[in-house]
Length: 485
Image (cartoon, rainbow, N blue to C red; front, side):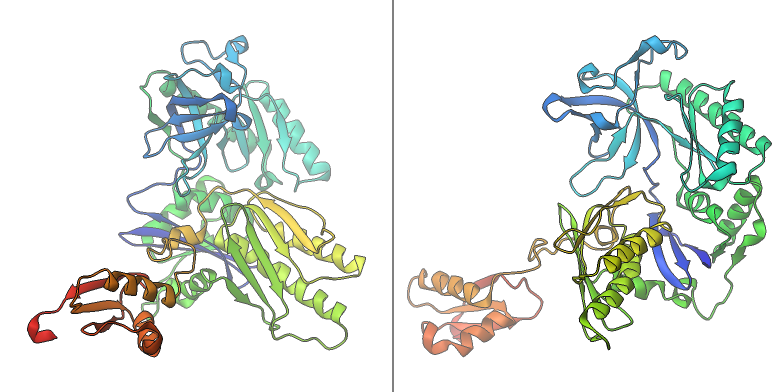
């Protein structure tokens, strides 16, 4: 699979697009005046405890307090006690918190809508080869590494770990890495933690004690280093920084290229904006003529697969299988591109053969291996539904790129013209005679009134005026002057 990481930056924002085999699969943007929150470490202040919800709100200096759920809590450490004494750790329960207390937390999910950031006290510091967890005594290896290499990495980390507190998770990027490089990163991560802890113990809450890498740094570390792709950017400073980052990690800086074609912009050449606009639509057409429909709700994401214009050639079962297999790959691409998460329910076209159903689930699992977010798929239900979950850490594309319609308030529908016409008639009838007024409303409403004039029977003296750019549910009544009657 050919992978390209496109990076463009201007005075407003930094944008990153991931191209796999010529198709856009991921897109992220970060305003120039703001930094990402996920991964940041804060000394927060417990503002409210909800025992009945097994959670607490913690102030970390943002507009809204962060949310700390008991299931996201690791061992709680008091700042006025020695780190080296394990007996000084509190059990990770909400009942052991106190309002006004300082607590070290990490952001795991950005604020979404009215909800504040999701927090955790299970601290983790990511590196290139591994993730360091200072409060846990554990050594693990990525599931994507198996066999002798898995055993080698686990034994190497355990051998080096003798001099370090805490635990380590070895990442996929560590496959084939030298022992010296692994040991050096373990030392660097533990040194970073010592600095974080020292800052945490001597600051007032709320306070940011560690800033996670920005969008460019995270993308190079999380996306590029896992494969053999390239970075393509139109900003010389970004190119220089990416080369330095790759060199510091022992990678090839020649994988970074600069886009210098003045005839067309980088994102234009790869049709990124066109793909983003398509990703904001609910319906996505497949090459065969079938389609998928995606609808996000507060509770879950519903995805429906339709045959559309594709009729097949052999049998209904084969037609359904062909469309479902094609849709599976596109669904995963859309999930990644739109940054959808939480509970996802997919309604595939019904299939009767067990082998076809098993092949479809296997196809989904295979394509999901390209996704960096953790996910879990259940078998196809008796109703032909596939249920899955996907870890959500960033706002989805729709929430980033769009806002709630002020007319329908996000419902997608407004009151019918005849309802607005009735409201207009009631308002006119309530006026004292003579009713010489100008009624201004949306074009559809005025058209409905005129087409049904005999039925509605507007009083004499009422004039109608259509306005194109108005809220379709609003109207106004304005008294007419003598010369206007």
